[in-house]
Image (cartoon, rainbow, N blue to C red; front, side, top):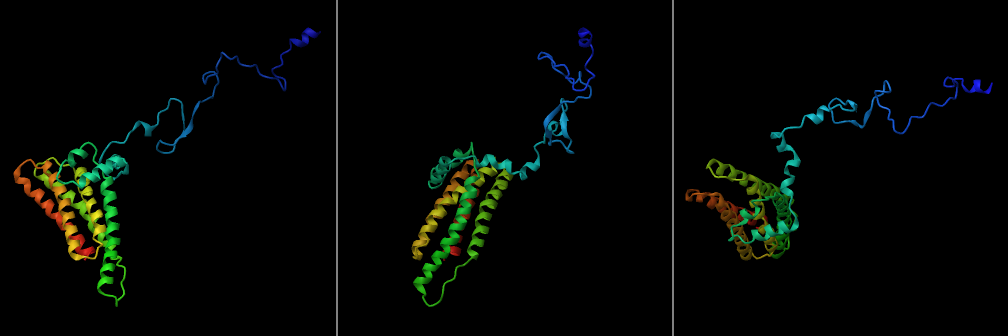
Amino acid sequence: MEESFTTLPSSHLLGSVPAVVGEGKKVTSQEVPGANLQIFPPNNGGSGGQGYQTLGATSDGAAQEPNNNWKGFFNIYSYTQYFNVDTDIVLNRLISSLYPIQGDFVSKIDANPDLYGLVWISTTLVFVIASLGNCATYLMHRRDDHSTPWNFDVSYLNMAAGSIYGYALIVPLAYYFLLQYLGSSASLVRFWCLWGYSLFIFILSSFLLVIPVEFLRWTIILIAGAASASFVSLNLRSYIQTTDLTIVAISAFVLQMGLSIFIKMWFFA
């Protein structure tokens, strides 16, 4: 009687426990009908928001890589390589800009030209000449006239930004196209780097231009302008293969001197 009860099938009874699958056996999607393995997290890269993607399926977005084209010009990540400089490199280039007779600045930046100097030096020069220019006019006003009140000129900042940024961007661009037209191998990034560091000496000289002595001011700005102009023209010679293009270096010298005189006349008059 006991043996007959033990042989009865119990899989259909309520509360029965299914058989345990052995450790060595794995259940696959072929053994379990309707099963479908999923890959997590959901596939957000594909177009159309396809959600979760099944195993073995390929994403259309991953299969198609964007090609390098003119759109990279408007991508900020395209310019990160030109800001890959540390403090030692920047200081070395700043010191080199103060010694124009060496003329080897182009060879120093040939492997790694940067735009950090252009942005940082130009922005610093804008605020320096705008603030110190007002300070210089205040000292001259206090020395010559005590009766009328002195007012801070906010337009100095607008004029400084327009002139310095415009000069640092447009002048190298013009020389780049000019030398390209004349058949010389020129680099726009290297030109921007060269002209950017050439403005550093004007930051230092601006602190001396606050002194309310007109003769001393002219002496300081002419020396600074000559040093900056020599720095640009001597390094520009490396892109000039023939003596017929010497006028290009001379014109760069004249333009740099013109910038120095403009800074003196407009901000430290």
